[in-house]
Image 1 (cartoon, rainbow, N blue to C red):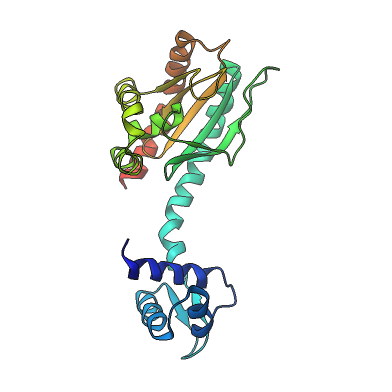
Image 2 (cartoon, rainbow, N blue to C red):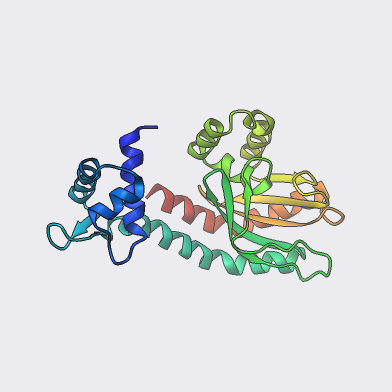
Length: 238
């Protein structure tokens, strides 16, 4: 951990959560820095364009620079949701199971949209739910599709990675990942990556989803998602 970088980000975060801005003395006291150190770090952030002052000695406020950095990704993710939603609805009707879209988020995945199974006995997945990448079908599909993500997770979870590496390799070779009643008892899942950073899962009770059925669903899903996956890969490359 480089202390100066850590302190700069702490200051940036403190300024960002104060819509009305924050003065040097206030933010320095909040983060436990002397005024000189805080001033130098804030001046650097100001020079880089991440914060600003209306006049010398006035409150610091964040600029829209961070939003401009993350905006294109957020727009691409929203566009992907719109494209994938009808396909998910068709897959849920065809398979009778819950279908959901997830994005990689650190060492977890985040569910951003879901179509629930029409069956009385079903797996309910809600937008906003998080699960770990390692040990889950969605996670292994995401890791298989992105060497960069796999490298970060391998470094962050050195003890757990060897337990799941073979599953990630199999998912890379097959083009889909399976979870056969392992992560959640009684639940099985198949997941198909969409370019890098996104994947679609189809999940339900293991009593309906044996391995043969999951492989069959993988074929249906890959065919249905192929055009969207190609578009997502092109967006990632761009």
